[in-house]
Amino acid sequence: MDHYREQRSIFIYIIPVALALLVVFFVYKSGRRNAIAGLVEPVQTPESGHFERTIGEWKMNFDYEYAYDIEALVIHTKNYPETDVGGKMAPKDLALAWGTVAAYNKSIDFHWGQSNRWYHWYTDTYEEIAPVCLSGFDAETSVSIQSANTHVIAADNSVKRTISRIRRGDHVHLKGYLVNISGSNSGGRTFTWNSSTSRYDSGGGACEVFYVTSAQILP
Image (cartoon, rainbow, N blue to C red; front, side):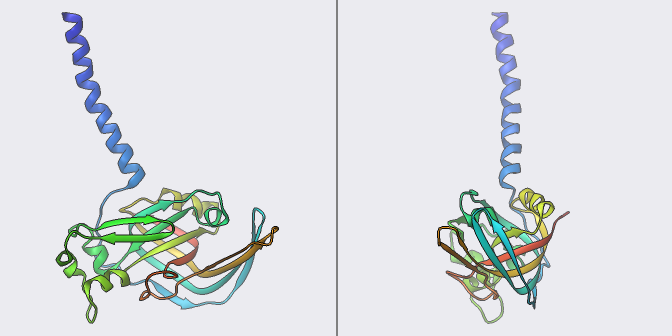
């Protein structure tokens, strides 16, 4: 009987510890819901330039469209397998928000998600998103204007390591270039990835293709 009580006592201590470790692991992997006020629209300025990079069997051409500087709230992240040239260049997409979307992200129950290089969202009621409205735009359009799915290409290994640590809820500052990419492989296949250069578009082609030269996770 005493042996039974001792075993039960051990389990009573082990279970809460195990649950706590699971919570810590989940938060580490997926991040947390967060809100940040005062984040302004990304700054982009016209830029020209070109470089080439060999990625496996692919020869890729990168053309600068704009210099791009963004301080944003990470509302979701998605890792992609490095099994194709897109995955090798950008193994992680970041869904980013600023303005009223970032400010109200915690009080509004946004359901953010990413798949197949797209991001998506919904709320349980349309009335929930009324606070994000920008002058002259409805709430749904205001969410689109103040958030973006971003294909992130690291300029070097240091930037790649920082990007790999970014989680949902992080406050990040990223600098680099919006780029158009084209290339071909030894088998004659071609690849094209063109960046959006507007915050006002949506649907196919509305994602930013961002060649990142500087990445910071801010306090």
